[in-house]
Amino acid sequence: MYSETPLLRWDIFCRVIDNFGDIGVCWRLACQLAQRGQSVRLWVDDPSALGWMAPEGASGVEVKRWTSPLDMTNITPGDVMVEAFGCEINPEFIAAYAYHISVKGQKCRWINLEYLSAEKFVLRSHGLPSPVMSGPGKGLIKHFFYPGFTAGTGGLLRETNLLERQANFDRTAWLEQQGLNWQGERLVSLFCYEPAGLGDLLEALAQDSPPTCLLVTPGRAKTALDAKLSDEKRLKCLWNKRNKLSFLYLPTLSQNDFDHLLWACDVNLVRGEDSLVRALWAGKPLVWHIYPQDDDAHVAKLSAFLDWLQAPASLCNFHMHWNGIPPAEAVHSRPDFLPQEWQMCAAQALKRLLAQDDLVTQLIRFIAKNH
Image (cartoon, rainbow, N blue to C red; front, side):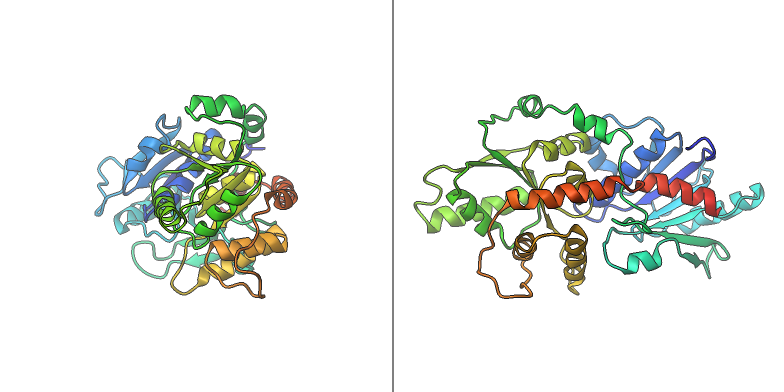
């Protein structure tokens, strides 16, 4: 289907705000474009995370440090500019791009890649043009491109070989390769900020019948867990005395191994945007710790996602408690942890998503059709 699509040169611009979610998405985008024959230059202000996120690099992807001002020595802009997550491309690059496409007689291919949301405004805004009214890009037109969960949006990032990789995945072998001493317990991944419901979850898992092993990612998740464990042990001398809950601590994982972690676990607790998408592809019960925003915009965003997910009431209640959001209806203080009840919901969501074209397919098609 790509034989009719011109092979283009892409410049993707990304700023690392915090927690590496932005660069994680941009790296996956760059790799998936390159896998389909496109030439990609990824401009990033802090590429250090790629050292552990993608230690082997990727054929067809060139990483450039994004400085201000930008060193334009020997730089010729490509055919497509992607401005990820509201970052602003340097005026000198935009000026060079405007000149470049003018000389070559090309149309402007400038994409404003937005954040992921299930809210209704995405359907209204996806693909809309945004004329540039001033500056070196005056007269050019950007287009909004919104990732999303439904037809009419830009879809989600998904590798063409994802299902094949999953089919060949061996959980036991991967755990052994990671040096994780798994004794057959239920596995739950923990990748989060500082969730309000973490203490209650630990209490529930310590009292649950099946033993649980929490696979803890480094950074904020581990720090948050350590703080809660300290509280539990200080306040409750008999806490987890039956050892129903155990912990294994993980190093930083490459993107491929993070996928493997989500496939290996029975339940995934994830955060941000990139890991949410990867957890959806895993097809396992998931709980999303959404990035909190001062104006509570995350509340509407989380509610829209749960509506799309067709989450049962128990999963909605757990999400609200996990995120510290008061429930719409009165519920008891600690929602139950019921992954067996949430599995059908996750499987059906995966089926709906697989029926849609992925983001890169749609992006290439959008460029070919509209430019």
